[in-house]
Image 1 (cartoon, rainbow, N blue to C red):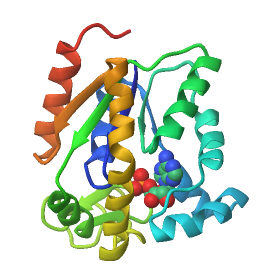
Image 2 (tube, protein in one colour):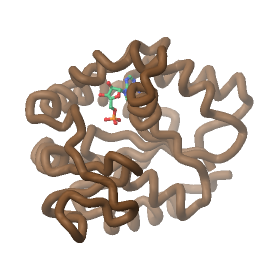
Image 3 (cartoon, rainbow, N blue to C red):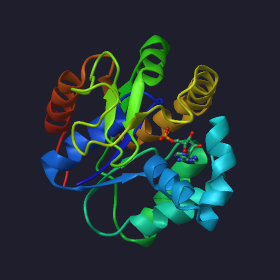
Length: 215
Ligand code: AMP
């Protein structure tokens, strides 16, 4: 199964990608995480993308295309964070065609701006293992300490009010064209992602199940 998750920053793509990946036993391709790792390691790629990420802007399409191409093979996957504009959707089609594979479904996590701001400003991430928390909705057992590995919980560099607002605007600007593209292909599923994570996941499973065969 090959799935793409679309949605504004804070729509819950990371959480749902993990649930989907565990449930169907397919790998996750999370572009934001891959890029953050490159920045952390101080690689050449990391150096190229850091400035864009700090400002909440999209990294140029040709740079991220190379990263995506490297991570797609003939196994099943759930992809989070790509494509983010219509040009990237076309590039993804080319990559898939070259590899002789197709997408089964594109899942759109539909949220309001209020939900996004509340989620992102309260998000905390483990510095060591990357696990996600929320100060109100998903707090760790001990304040600022990861339940899984004991690492320190921090706010992501781009989860500030200004950058969050910018990322919302960037998403909205590109969203309609990209949703329309997959709607016309007949593979778009839309889910109300203002609800809690379990409810959203249940709706995804139901809609995947009732939206026809996928291989
Ligand atoms: P995310 O973790 O998905 O919110 O992504 C964090 C940042 O990584 C974004 O604000 C962009 O700077 C960069 N990024 C992630 N995905 C893409 C993409 N598909 N195209 C360009 N830049 C991206």
